[in-house]
Amino acid sequence: MKRLVASVGFSVGILFAAFSADAPPTETWAGAVYEYASVRWSGDKTSIIWPEGTTQRVIAFGGKKRPEGADERAWYLTGAINIMARRGFEFVYMSNDDVLMKRAVTKQKE
Image 1 (cartoon, rainbow, N blue to C red):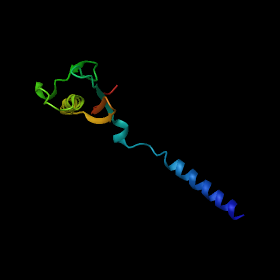
Image 2 (cartoon, rainbow, N blue to C red):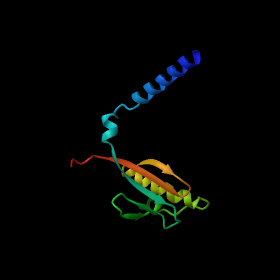
Image 3 (cartoon, rainbow, N blue to C red):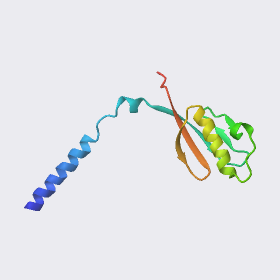
């Protein structure tokens, strides 16, 4: 009998938690719209793909020559991240050769 009461109590608790988790999202979350830019390392051919579909070749650090001994991948990806950050993009994801960044945009009324 104690197990039955405990099981029913546990089930009611789970149901209560599940239904209370369905609360509507906040206005800030519901109104957020993002656009994304990405870059894939490809040596001196590394390019940023902007949200509108254009590409920009990364000339890291204002065209300065990569210092002797500096890692080529780190040099170009760091340059690309800085270019995107100056345009208001924030870091989202990075794998070995890819970087994805986003920025909030104002939602246009339809």
